[in-house]
Amino acid sequence: PPAGPPPSRHSEMFGTDLLRTRAATTPDRTAVELVDSDQTWSYRDLDKAVDELAASLDALEADDDTRLAAALPTGFSFVCSIHAAVRLGWELTPLNTRLAAGELADRLDKLAPDVVLCARETEKILAEAQARQAAPETDGPRRYTVDDPAEADTATPPTADSPAETDPHDPTDTALVLFTSGTTGESAVGGVA
Image (cartoon, rainbow, N blue to C red; front, side, top):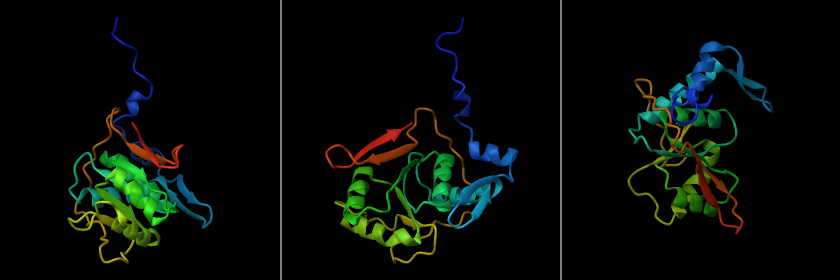
């Protein structure tokens, strides 16, 4: 008899890019719909956009254990950032873009992200938050935007010449790091594998 419990039905998902699988099986079905603007993207469109973002982020030549903080408004770019982080095997932390700069700085201090991704509407508050950090980063711009940058120290991720090298999460890897409000009023952080 085999030792240990039988494999979970979920164990076959690890190492599988579920978005890519869905795009291959139902490419024309709606994957994302922004109700307030009537914009829709098919699984094919979403997969292509995720490929492009993942390749650009991969071109940053970050480590396999890269922490990506995403200060993006709810929308298509945010959905792409989730899937790109999964595709690259990076840890993702979504940042609440409604927080004040001081609160964002506190979260950035606790998280110590390697890469921060923003959009035009969140770039200014993120720049202010990074300037308020206890130990602001000094080794060049590590804040990237999915749009054209408005701030001088924000860059766009490099254009990739080749697809991203995918590195799916292992079941024991931390994939998502979330902040909660905490019971004391201080933000608390926890990871999800």
